[in-house]
Length: 218
Image (tube, rainbow, N blue to C red):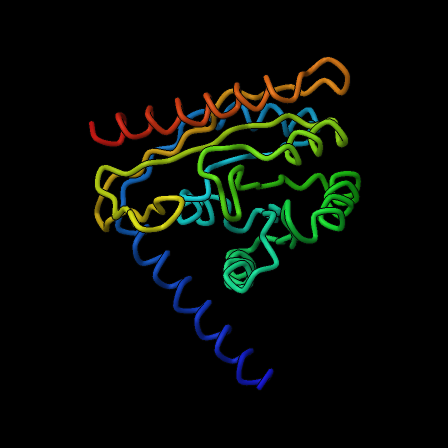
């Protein structure tokens, strides 16, 4: 049974990868704010990118072959997402706020010290509530002395899965995708109020999505 399950997941991840590539290769892509990220990398500052769960589809493509480390839940759905992320040249870390979080936390600390990988976290994942950031993201940023960079995207034409908890988004082929890196948030271990920072980050993610939605339609 385990062998058949492995074959199933291998087949599905190949299909999903092909679907993502086939979809996005037809689209026009515009990236904004990447110069800020290059500057942070040049100065060897650890980076945590946060985004809403509904934006996974293009985010996986954007960070392909970078060695970035997305935090992915230990659920069955997470297993598929993890496999697809690996197909795109990333190094997933498994865990979430509800299960496996402590192990994932330690793995991120070790990774940042040794290979300076960028970290990707679905700020409201894996199960919501939507558009509400978990405390763990901020605690991790304080621990590894990193910046948090909100990211978002939207397309001129999108399929919205309205019955999903996160209103998952998939760009429609031949649309225009606008992706934006937001303003870096420098986390002070002692001075930042966690609740206030959560609100600021949530506001920035909402602002970014609205901006991308407007600019993708022009």
